[in-house]
Image (cartoon, rainbow, N blue to C red):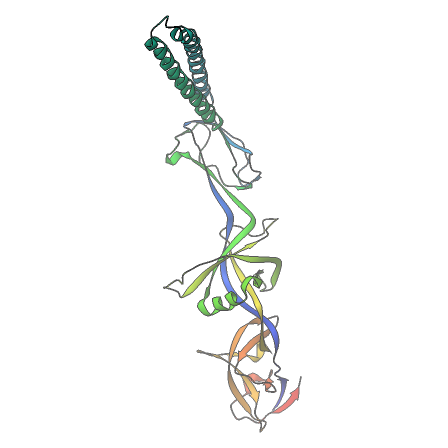
Length: 331
């Protein structure tokens, strides 16, 4: 039987590890109300991109403006009492030094001044607290990202610290993170590459996309249930191609290895292993179990089971049986 053969040659091929991962936002924020009040307005379009500091919601300001005015009035009263106590202490001090009055009267005046100084500090703190709460009535985006749907509508009473305080979510998708797991053996390959390992995302056709990512996290423990190690990579995502929650195929490039490249159609899949047909020294077909890596273009990466010079049969595979005489034709 005429068959086409390919002479096996050992060559340098990329050392790759494929896995399935899930995209995550590099930053995922819950936007919450920090003061209680009536939600007056939603100032953004749901699902739109916003910049850090952009207004998202506004809460009724009037009660907080009143509290701020009261705090400022209390501060003015405290300042007036302090100034009066300071003038009184300054009048009594020289009289006490000349013994025109008792020392106790001067000490009492100084103590009263100290009390009013403390009252002024307390009133100033209350003014700052009132101003801070008033600023919280404008809910702004803490980071740049994509907004989620509004969880509370206008007119709703929101309570700081309660369930109603959650207003929406904000996700940063550029860069995007991808979480995936690899086996212990694959993790050792990636680890041996050190900081040289790079990561790519595969498209629907199984081909690497243009974006190149880097590993920014690796777990310090092995998952005892699955015997896998969790890794995370970061990718540039300027146009939002990858969305949080999306499942993606990941390929880690961890250096190079010496292996054989064999066309995919030449590799047969069995129940327990993969195999190829080779031409024996007596020009008879021989089945050979091989160890495979990942695909490299249209070829399988064969890491074990072949030797340099082996003649691998690449066609008429369905007609082959062990020991069948063949007529090899070089490809």
